Amino acid sequence: MLDIINDYGYIGIFLLITIENLFPPIPSEVILTFGGFLTTFSQMGFWEVAISATLGSVLGAIILYSIGRLLTIERIYSLIDSNIGKRLHLKKEDVGKAGKWFNEYENKAVFICRFVPIVRSLISIPAGISKMKMGLFVSLTAIGSFIWNAVLIYLGRVAGKAWHNIVDYMDFY
Image (cartoon, rainbow, N blue to C red; front, side, top):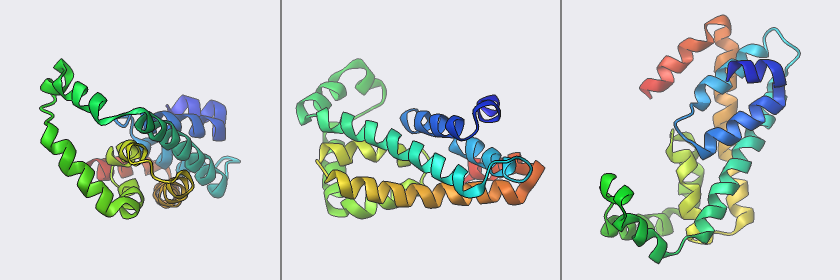
């Protein structure tokens, strides 16, 4: 990941953050704190890194939102009944509870979940399933993602060469 950022700069950050949204185990903390560190000695600027990361976040979220739009309750129940669903201990009643919770807190959920690792990506799927208005979804995603990205970039910038220490603290979070 670090080589990609070194070699491709803003485009590398954009692509890595897009991929991070699609595969949540990839840690944005590493990408963004390193990006923040790079702003201290390279030509990369704080705002440009933040904008590149936010655009990547939004693109990844739109892809997951679109997947959610394709899902029906029948497809979700089929997944739950499959071997994967059984291995993950998914239950049909949990889907109903999650749906009710999302419908109650829709806007707040999309915004606030941008600050929670793994959930920040996955929240896009129920937004798509519920057919949340795309403009509202993109706005809330962009604002929440920008804040998250800017904080991590700033921490990487402040930490300087010790940027990797931020990752340890974020792992605890």
